[in-house]
Length: 208
Image (cartoon, rainbow, N blue to C red):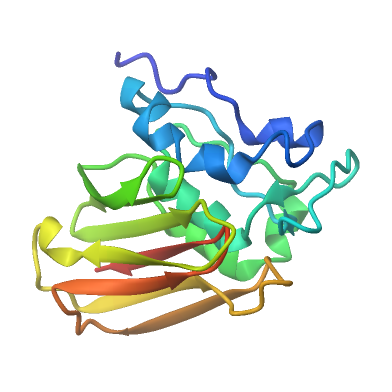
């Protein structure tokens, strides 16, 4: 440090090109490594897959590789996983076809001023909040094959004078893991917020 910006040493998303369920459950792995591997520092996991498979339709397709879990989960991993030199895994044309995801990737920082653990348990869920300047990014990922309500305790982050909140969440259609529902509104938040997370899904909140 400061010459070290990232480390390859992690079982990254590229492994999905040659793995099959149930032997390799990347979804459960994703909600375990924040508690173990990422404690040791940065990791080059390469999230951002725009082709996404549910538990029932995930396949090892070499010519069109996909992730396990929802697309919103892929966005959340840019916040949950720490990588100052962040690499995205898909082709440029894939992001050009998905403006909602591209806009998020433009907005999300790779360097943070502050990080707070919000809630979760290894193998089940992970919710983290990271601050860049006056903006907080809160993201969570669900490691279960069933819906899960994740708790976001806003008392754990500093500053309460937020003007806007942007949200990225899975749609309610479990058979369409690529569907994302977005929203933006004036900030009017309780001290604690419950977020309904889809099976193997994720969410992001941006408080500015």
